[in-house]
Image (cartoon, rainbow, N blue to C red; front, side, top):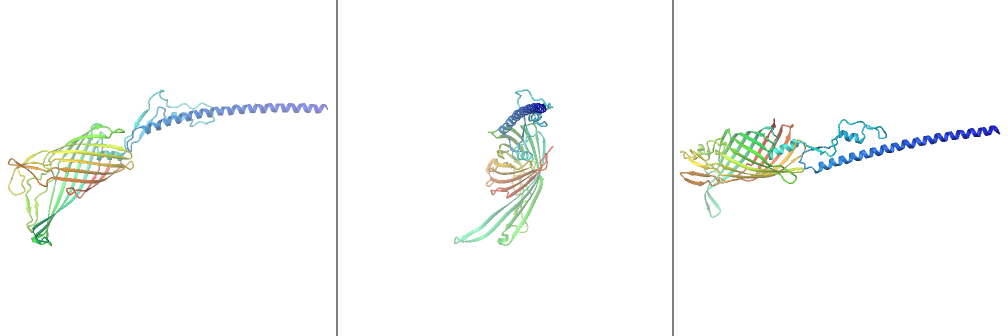
Length: 433
């Protein structure tokens, strides 16, 4: 009996000690879980703070007026290293130890954020340079090549109608084909973000072919004569000034003024000749490479970014200064006189798309109206019939940036009026230094 009692007391003692141990383990587990809960709460608060900061950054970027192809990098008052520290990166979420110290100290409370705007992409800069003006305070040399072709046909009837249906007389069909190739060097330099200068010097090769059908009154016989000329064209220079910068609601506005010097050969006083073989074609002995008079130009261009497109428009006026020449007659004998070339009004508009960082496309229309020219001889002035012209051209362009400083610009112009060239193809290679 005594032994049973002793066993019973020992068992009770053992159970009591085990229960105490289990209770102690439960208390430790509760404390550990409570610590984990507190750590998770602290992590959640830090992550919520990071979410709030990132949301503010995103809202700032979205509300900032952006240009097409322009990337904005917003540097918040809390640097990325601080965001990582707040997010607890590199530390265990269940670890209760303090986070490592940040290598960057956060700015003082209430400090305004710093917004840095990256420059536009190369394709956007190419569009600005070709269709507007790029004020980049750098020297840009732009060699270019342009080929244009046009032909004009004229029907000449010499005779009369019999019985209102039968033509009796001579029929002549005259055609003039013109090929013009221009090599030019264009130099631009930006003095500031508002002022830029430009100089252009062209070198021109011209060839014109004069054809006539109806030699000797026969519609089966024709004659042909070609004339060509090579020389320096008219050198021009201009200044561009940015009047207003582009904002969310207003466009970029640039005004310009320039002049054209008569460095090319003038078209006045060039004698004409007659085909000595068939005596049926009259043609000039040489071709001009310039206008022969000084010209002053003024204009304005506007550009607006409408993401993802860029729209632009321009208008201008060219005033030709009256000049005196020793001979303005196309026949034999010198006949001095004054020539006032007709002034010209021009305008254009279009749009461009920067498809990626390097490639862009453009579509535009340009129009120029030249007024009648006036000749004064012996104090008598008269306007030259047929000297006015309407030139309308539809342009399709593409630009590809080889690198950050060199691009290839191409353009095809299709003439829409009788006075415009049938087609003009242009290639330019702007290089920045």
